[in-house]
Length: 304
Image (cartoon, rainbow, N blue to C red; front, side, top):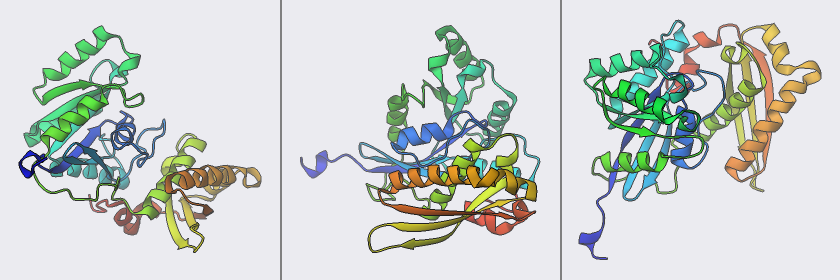
């Protein structure tokens, strides 16, 4: 192949936005081809902008999984929503993901549509979870969205099974601006390993605990040591706001935190392809959500 036959390199950013629990993190993991964003059945799991990197032909697409957009009430919620809109403002393309099982446009998504119109921004729509919805309902929902005048294209996908995702990836690749790639070909995220490890543990806590407690905790990687045999020792702190929350996290005889540690350690070993020794400590810090240092670690604006 001559130099004139070499495809032009493209590179850009695509923001994934949507209401809480629309399937943004599942879609990001599917597009990247590896798990880099935590996924749970609970809403508002993603707190920071998680960036994954996908390659399609000559295009490198930096995919930004944003926190769900909703009406915020607390400081952390305001910072999460501000981060989501920041992802839109910085992106070359915006993908709005909608849970098609909801049948009608919900209030959180109408908030997103209003924000896009205010910015004069166009987007593409990904109707997710199509395998659980009849075709007639999908077509009616697509028509309702198209009438908003915001979307250049509508894709029908299942982020979980992968149906329709290849077409969306092809489209995004074609829309990236010409330019050199920002990252090496084999890199799938620009998140620091320490933060990814903390997010894995936080996911396991979300899956293990119930009701409101997952939203009242955070996880930090306090220490990371690499050893000559290729293994790693990772020490993390789980911060909670109350003594009663600490007791729930630990469980009777430490059974809950032990199960969380084992599940997180197993996933980290699979992700990193190395032996991991994970140590978890639960500490009470009443106002951790008012600590600016936590926001910096997540790339959030404390003053949002």
